[in-house]
Length: 77
Image (cartoon, rainbow, N blue to C red; front, side, top):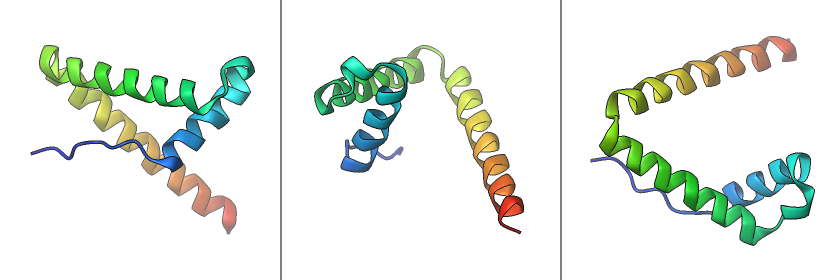
């Protein structure tokens, strides 16, 4: 069974940072929570409506994160 996502301060702070860069007027904790909840609901609907697409997106995200970690490691050297 998949783990249930719970909102946390780190994610809220990350979204606030993103909003400061992209939509400063809405860079508030309330808007960050709203955005995270909307994303969670969208992912939930996608899991029901198109689980294959969700799996593909998850795999692409994991590959992207792996590449980012490799690039970070190489830049440290």
